[in-house]
Length: 292
Image (cartoon, rainbow, N blue to C red; front, top):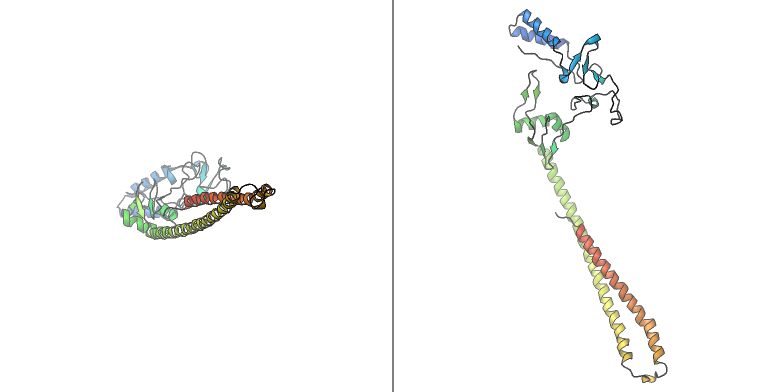
């Protein structure tokens, strides 16, 4: 003789057809009326029901004892103020399982436990303890039908518990391949690779442009240095008074130093700083390039 009890998502028992179905089932099994009555009585006596919690039937309240709180399945609400209100300040302090008992569990009344499949980043997902096709559907963002088909195809048909309810044949560590996600990940990888290639190409162009500027500035400095050395060599080789500069040669030399040579030397120094800055910038740009 098998006992089957079904519940609404928030825990209220399916009263009428539950009892009728069980009576019919017992009769089909040729169970005596006395045995049927005893079985139904035992079900009433068995207090641990929805989520394995004890039903408190004192005073006809029909609340479940969740340890931290009393829970009313008729309302889908805890009947005590949640002490974790500050943590869950976006919802009512009496709400049960974040109003989503299909995917979430609040075993102790101290916050929901949501099972997440581990996304391996390649279109495959690894199960953690308590995972199922339902949680896979949520975590992989696919329909439950697709998730259920994939789980059964890759890990065998669903199993049934003592109450006749199906559950996924999944254990911790099992890996499920989601083809649509594999394709999605491949496309994402290709898109990312194209972005990296485009970014690296842009960096290479900037480095090449900086090198051109650096070469141009370097050539300019060579010309400046030639112009600086030429008057120095010319006037240092002349004897005092040569060329009619006996009295004015010294003055002219100072004027040449101040008005031509010194400004050129400043330009050379500034250009050298610019070349050095471009070299440092290119090093930074090289470091920004990404490996494909």
